[in-house]
Amino acid sequence: MQVLVHGGAGSDPDDPAPRQAVLDEAAATAAATTDPVGAVEAALHVLESSPRFNAGVGSAVQSDGQIRTDAGIMTDSRAVGAACSMPGIEHAVSVARVVMEATPHGFVSGDHAVSLADAFGIETGVDLWSDRTRERWAELDRPADGVQSELAWIEDRYGRTDPGGRDDETDDEMDQPAQTATDPHESTLGHDTAGQRPTSSDPTDHDTVGAVALDDDSGRLAAATSTGGRWLALAGRVGDVPQVGSGFYCAPAAAVSATGAGEDIARVTLSRRVARHVERGCDADTAAALAIDEFAELTGSTAGVIAVDATGTLGSAYNSAAMQTARATDR
Image (cartoon, rainbow, N blue to C red):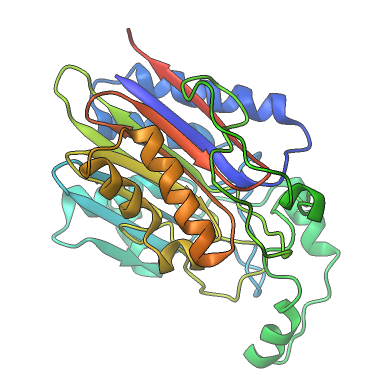
């Protein structure tokens, strides 16, 4: 089994070492499993349970003061499942897997997804707040007079800080020249392989988590992505993560997970774009870099991707300040 995981593309983490340790644990846990679907689910369980990431516990808070989680999962046979807008669900990836394996559907949302989770023994009603998100929310003065007021209130706040309350990326970070990856297989802050920085000076938070896996023996692939959304999104907002081809994608050529500015990722179907480059003859690392170059040119925004192709090549690219990743293998 080969596994690559990410902890989100965004600003430099305040304390990267503990986050990296969790990512390393997630990758190692996944590599010890026996199939790629189980591998990506196991990896995300570790990350969803850590308040250091924006998935499960520690997720972003929406404008109504509620936390709602989303996830998607897919295999190389194009079996797919997604679930979104789920209050009280720590392991959103497991709900997505239930949708994929136990229903005739590809996507289930909201309270109905929570009911589905409960019916299949997935814990519901979990307290997803972390100390930092609770403190951050308590500092805010939310309007109480309807959606129009909430929209005006979040206009300059949406996505401006991560759920842990870290500062935004600075304009200087956004203007750094891109660098080329030297070893896409190392456990690092990621590899800035984009061809250019986005021109936007509006930094945002992206701490979505994701995993891709290849079973070397069977050649099977899987991808999964999980998120708590973005800080102070309008209540009910759903981003790219549970949208197949955007936040995640898997085909016989490659498995891909994306992270970043969700609306923009969805506009260009970023994960499908990476897989398409592999289908045209690129390896996973080259495909990831090409897709991020295209994403930056088309949207002027920030994102990151990880991928593994059918030959076992791992790839990652991003055009934000940082993207922590980890890899593991059972060999």
